[in-house]
Image 1 (cartoon, rainbow, N blue to C red):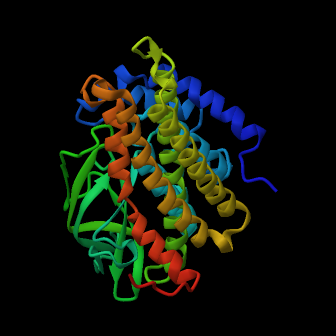
Image 2: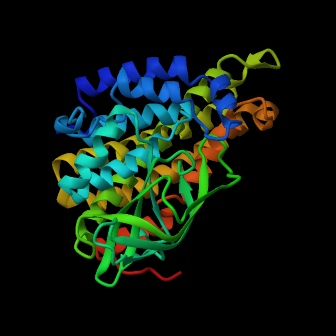
Length: 375
């Protein structure tokens, strides 16, 4: 048994890496960081039309490729490696939520546009727990309209600034529900935020009786939403793995070229040992991330454990490796001109997204029935 992606996934990796080397260079990333939307619509459409990335896990009947989370994990790993500036993660989160709830009408309405690259989507909730969102949904009482109205706020929503579709996890009297809000809906306000990570847009989203369509039956989709969130955690872990792996490459390259006192710095014990530790960290994250995507496809009953493991390991590894990379580069690693800080900011910003490492470990302890250990 192997958890590593198969030959077809590796071929996809090669194609995606080649695409990103052309379309997501460091210079392009820095250019897009300064734009309002944070991405290039032409590149976004090219990714959909020529590579089919947005529709990778969408069924063929809705314009997708019907691939698995393993292939999507490979794509996100490569995007994390390149710090790809595009609303891909937000769109992926919305896609996995739609697929998990399996509402045929909603899927027919939204998934073809996502697969074609016509629709930018994102997933929003209010509060620290998506399944206990502070955004509330109430029946609108208009049989001819969307049927629901959302009220509340989500303080931090990725990729919302350019979203044509906002999927919202909201509370109802019967339990959590998933709702679709059009990007131009009345009562929907998006306020761009100054984020730590400039390579990804972040917005505060306000709902003031915003009209919404229910996806699935509100109050009866808790289990499906929990699965969607576990998928999201695993996919984010793959993105974090890609960034960490690139930082290891960056450190090794620099250690083999930078010369001090007549010797390459890679020959110094402090640098070589740090690079070795980084390798162990990255391979640990690789194991956790790839086990997560494999489990999602092959052993879904074990997904909560695999997601908790991936979420806790990969986010911490990415941050530690990002800090070590800066140390290996010395003074130049602290400068704005060097890309090291871009990866550190991405690592820090994703470390708390979808749950902190400690939260993932606490959930793992509950699932595995591990008693709390007092200090």
